[in-house]
Amino acid sequence: MTRIGPEGRWLCTIMATALLSAGCAWGGGSTARLSQAPPLPRPINGVTQFTADEAVAFHEATEQLIVACMRERQHTYRPAPAVANKRLAAANPYGLLTEEQARTDGYGTVGQAFETSGNRHGAPSDSNRAALEKLTKDERKAWEEDLAGSEDHYTKLTAPSGASLRVPKSGCVRHAHAEFYGEKWDALFFLAQDLANQVLTKTEASGTVRAAVRKWSQCMGAHGYAGLSSLQDPRRRIDEGLKAAGDDKTRWKSLGREDISLARHDYQCERESMMHEAVNRAQRVAERQILTPRWAAAVAELRELKQRAKRKISPSGA
Image 1: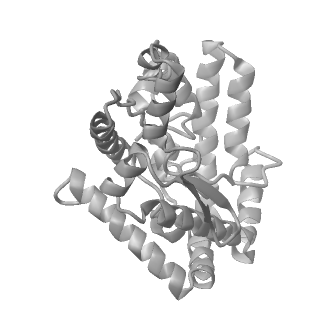
Image 2: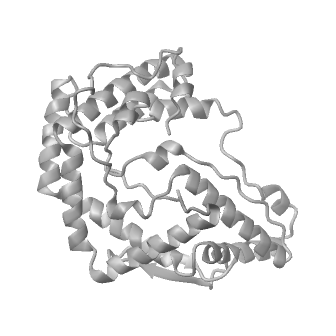
């Protein structure tokens, strides 16, 4: 199952229009009589994840701080545009679905493809490229070092798992992060990501979750989807179909119907196997084992820094 980081809801209207206005409720598998699912579990309560709106607001706030910092250093810096992927932000790291996701957008793969294809401008370009091309080699080096820090001003962070990351100790990006989030943000965030991945791995490997996955797989097989052994397998099936379809929008439309139908059956089988409950139980056990008092205190400190950042963009902190 995939791990989703932060730095990196559903667009039913766009997808439905693209798919001949057929609506966003294709496929069989009624979920009307299924038991209500508990909230989707996220390792350490999702402290390392952001909503799409939060990601955009935080990005824009730090970019303005970078602009001011670079101006103080006699440089011109143009903010990088914010790009929010609501589907990615809402995706569950365990691969679990909500009923709303399954009913209206499926796995979101085809809807995202239609949305992206409708954007003639594509991915945003580097806002500073044109200006940098006019600088001399030495001027450009000074600009880049003032932005991201010089090569000899980096420090190495090491997580409990042994994973490491080099982060700048100087430069305007570092300054902006420290001012907006807090001086300890980078180190705490990297630590929490590592802990979250450990929790996720341990949760997935638990007997409780593996038993639920077997029940889910049997349920999916009964609906005609044989050979699925992971909650990520249905997504991979749609992703592979989209890749094989190339730019053929007619095949996209057909795949979109399959996307919704498969997701509806997926959610139905998640509920019949009590998958959400199994993951919640196993995650609580994993967190008790991994979050020692020291790590729990660090996560709590990160959560407070995140809450302070949210209050900077919204007085209520909501």
